[in-house]
Length: 126
Image 1 (cartoon, rainbow, N blue to C red):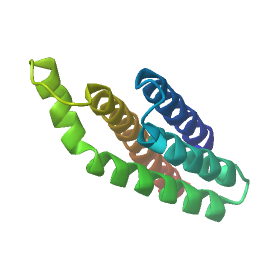
Image 2 (cartoon, one colour):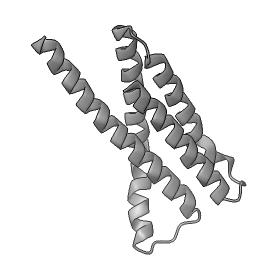
Image 3 (cartoon, helix red, strand yellow):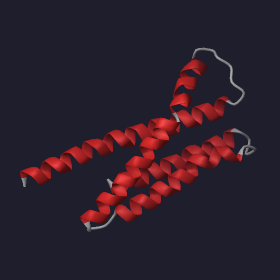
């Protein structure tokens, strides 16, 4: 899961870079997902250890940050549906970037929860 956390971080950095370029490099707030992505790279690097306690700590921190990010971006998910149905927004690229970041974080949370459940089952069986 540590490698998946690093991949999530890289994907968020790529989403941020694409959003920044798509806005004509005039909106530095488009880089916010990239800053969070760098945090995920850090969390994944710190979780990439043989010490199970440290790995659990950093993975739980990573999934908590991803869950908070997803929850904070729910309005963008709603707006992207409105955008697809013809609504007009002043910065549609920002909405699309936030929705993409939200989707990535949701997928990460779901995969982490599945992994945590499997790890718990392995501990109780073994």
